Length: 544
Image (cartoon, rainbow, N blue to C red; front, side, top):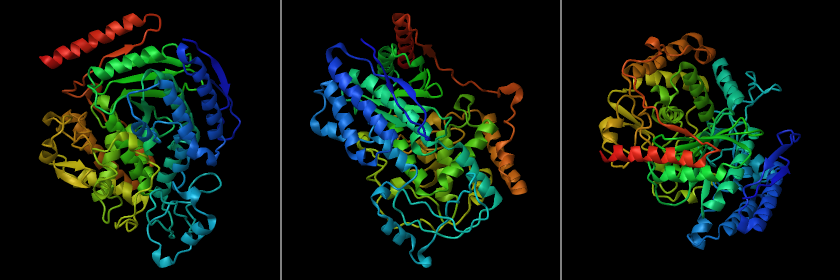
């Protein structure tokens, strides 16, 4: 295997930053094709950074055709390969996502005249709250009365209205603006994903490397890790054995790349390969899983929820910021995952307010968010068809929604008898979700907090199993609600103290510590031996 270093320009937002990158590994039998592919990749990365809008349509096809020629695959027919050309697993997606975060997917095709005409509709048609205007310093202008509603990502009937922001709403929006994932951070992650894709794809015929999680679903921050899903087959893999073997193989193929610093194989319920990197990617941590297709499905779903109403992202950002400071956003400490917190916010916006801010997208669009849809055909840039729903009728401010969220889970939602179902858009009896037929669902999961995963029907909050932590979480909602009512200041949440448990460890706390194996670059055989021994021990436990 031969390594060749190449220099390319990866421009930041001010087009002044130069970066040095490395090419993907070269197979001896296809060295010439790989060099051609490398040239194509670097040219297209440069074009993406220059925001060449006209290159969008052919870019993904060019890169995908190069990678499939490289693999010499007979496993997929031409129709399957065509379906595989989606915006998740190919670099075509970089520029598309840059526009998705700021504009409607079809806004580039809309003339200025049509846009102005749509803006100048009669005042009687203008309903719904609006996103705030920022001042010259990038902060919310609390005295602005002419606030523009951003173009809807989903082509829903969002129009203009007049509004004045209260202090707490302005704080929430400013907090979101300061912590949301920047375009520069997103582009760096997408660039790194592309490099990993071209390093891995020659070894797995017809594979796709999908971005999942907060990097993509609209709820990401600059500090967020990047989650990736390597799809090597449309079928499910045994995550306790087959997925580990796939990730072990990936470790072997990546071991000689100089821009990879360390790799750890984490034997979690869904095993992940965690990689850290040398500059210029030293601020990014990648968690790679194998064939965990549900991660692609829920990322696709949350991406549309985050774009459905402009208030969703700021509200989620404020809730996650509070939960982290409060110490209730860590599954390793028997508390809530970020995914569970997002589901709790969506559920509240579905049925905790009247009229609702969000519908159940799975109920409205079963053909778009069904459980049987091939993940290779999912595409977040396609707008949803217009349906007859009450969007725009809820006029609550960000402050009212945040206070209402805390009140809902402090005093309205019954954790002892009810479960959250974003799929159905309502709360249901916990006995109902516990009996859902799914290979991922077991009765033992449904203990303290019950949140139905929309596709596997398992409990996303199964990590909350300790009663004392559970009580602290419920008390946190009550304390946050009382503080907001008294102060109307976001700082009382963001600067809160963590939950206090006796000696730092709650009674009954026995969170299972998963094995972690660090890759030894100098002794690949020793690393593989440790992995095989760990897999064998899992298999023995399973057969007992």
